[in-house]
Amino acid sequence: MKNSYSNIFTFNKKILSKTIKSLKNGGVVGLPTETVYGLGGNAYSKKAVRKIFQLKGRPQFNPLIIHYHNIKDAQNDVVSNKYFEKLYKLFCPGPITFVLKRKNTSKINRYACANLKTVAIRFPKNKIAKAILKKTGFPLAMPSANKSSNVSPVNSKDVHEEFNTKLKIIIDGGKCKVGIESTVIDLTSNPKILRPGVIDKKVIENYLKIRIKTHKNKNKILSPGMMRKHYSPGIPVVINQKKHDGKSAYIYIGNKHKKRKDFFSLSKKNNLFLAASNLYKIFRIIKKKGYKKIQINKIPNFGAGIAINDRINRASKF
Ligand code: TXA
Ligand code: MG
Image 1 (tube, rainbow, N blue to C red):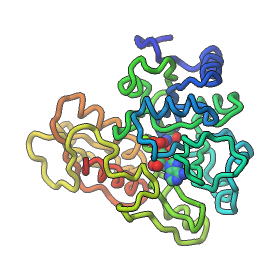
Image 2 (cartoon, rainbow, N blue to C red):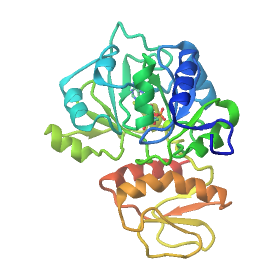
Image 3 (cartoon, rainbow, N blue to C red):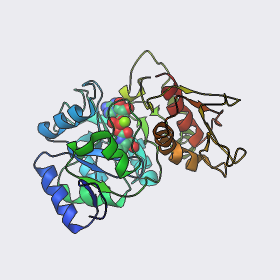
Image 4 (spheres, rainbow, N blue to C red):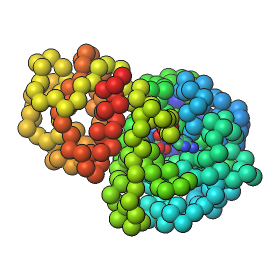
């Protein structure tokens, strides 16, 4: 171990076998994925699943995403369909989650899926997550490794900040490349985006050659992560701000306010993917600096910008 935290480990063979052993015993570990860090446990184990809910303080009605190494493993638990198979071919492993019908014979703990007849599944691309999933022999139920309603962690230290030593193992995989949670798409009937991500609706529509809806009815919770009280940095957030108020932290995209105190650029080169990847990191930095409020400039609403707007919009409702 090369850091000052007793529970953050660099990935190697020794920590891999220690992690597998812990997971087989119903343990829960913090590990990197390409989107955000996850809190992983055996999806077939009631003990592990309960521990995840308890650690996060997550409401029981909010189901977890089940992570697999490949499609063959997933087909033990879900009913496959043509859209799923097409999207899997193009995007997986990668930052997209599919909601599918649960098989009657599935061994996934019912508590993990909040007793629903559907299961959200994902195939992470991160090498560490993949290496672990290859060795477990069971899928991992894995929500983002933050306390319920907080901002997702994008570094191993962020996970430590959330759970301290309540986790015995946090594997360090550096900063998450995508930095924002996966796109969630419901494929149980006509495809519907439940949570926007960097794989955006337009790209999926062009590929499948169909129109896709985005779930917008805020009163009906289809995907409980769409609850408004979510992704909060813990201080008030106001969006679509044209002018700095002189005291708050001000988030924007570009390099117009370079070197000005209180100004934080999500991407100096106006790259929306980079902007998405920096959002949670910058939220945490601002909070640590002691600011009382965050103002955010208007963010372009296309591509990865749609996912950014989704998250900051929710953060502003806190
Ligand atoms: O990028 C990600 O997806 C990360 C990494 C760790 O994989 N995970 C993540 O998990 O964001 P979590 O638990 O923070 O968010 C899961 C989302 C929630 O919005 C949840 O309501 C939704 O997926 N979900 C899970 N199962 C579902 C289901 N059966 N039907 C509809 N939505 C579901
Ligand atoms: Mg989450």
